[in-house]
Amino acid sequence: MAQIEGLAAHAAGAELLPLRYDPGKLGAHEVEIAITHCGVCYSDIHLISNDWGISQYPFIPGHEIIGTIAALGSEVRSLELGLRVGLGWQSNSCGQCEWCMRGQENLCASAEGTCVHRHGGYADRVRANARFVVPIPEALPSEQTAPLLGGGITVYNPLRIAGVNPSSRVGVVGVGGLGHLAIQFARVFGAHVTAFSTTLAKEDDARSLGADQFVNSRESKAMKEVAGSLDFILTTLNADQDWSSYLQALRPNGTLWFVGVPPSPVSVHAFPLVSGMRTVGGSPVGSPFRLREMLDVAARHGVKAITERFPIERANEAVEKVKKGKVRFRAVLAN
Image (cartoon, rainbow, N blue to C red; front, top):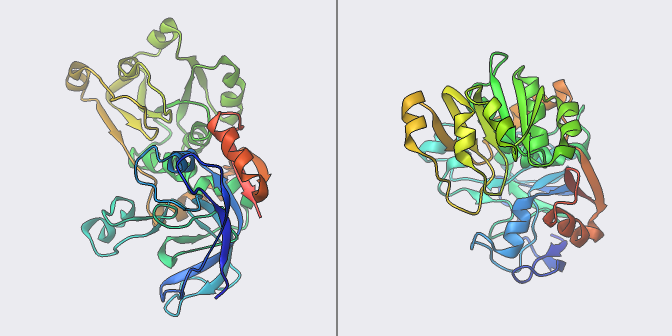
């Protein structure tokens, strides 16, 4: 089997440099994907810098992968050679625990990250367990779909968990890589969507994506005006905020849900939780079933990421732009 070539981080925060590795024999339940596109997610930045303390070097980042099946393991029946497929954050799970048996493989304690302790998608090929490789609907363009496999499922899954529907009033905090996808999916579900941002210039983007209302979260008056008006608030930010003001924006039985991870502990008063039966929660990505469902919804309703394309040779440039928040809204590497 030929070696796989990619761009790897060799130390915390270091520039990505070429790496070749021998993937070994293809497992019976694995597939090998010839990569055409790979999104640059902020999770990749965290892994490159070892912000979470879990990175092992050298490793090739990348987990928003689209390509075609180049090789099939002997036991794979669900996919075929040449099929256009996607691979997201997760590349395997135990398949036997309570959570896997429930179809919640994203909660498996033995879950394998596509680029955690293994090599990911800033490369010409990648391998994964076939259960986590999903066909891409024909209607979806590869470049604008790659970010759905990481960022898209991250925001889609909680909207489904919350049962968002045409009667729902949904808030999306942050109009960026995750937020611009969350607004689109909430609109598809028929919800009334309120976008929150500290950047006034994001209002036009938010409304063009489907937001009915825009709130400058720096303005206390604007925040007070939406008090008690929302059923579900999805926060996509990796920054600290006045979380109590978002809690106050919820109606009774409302939920404040985290998919972004702020640097400081989240602190809220218990009284609004108790008095209005409000809740605070969070979630990681989604199961392979939910990924397939999301892609079908995106194909039928025209949900696409707004992307900037970089040839894979310029991966370091893409990583720097994402790190500095200079990309509108997702960077995608193309082979």
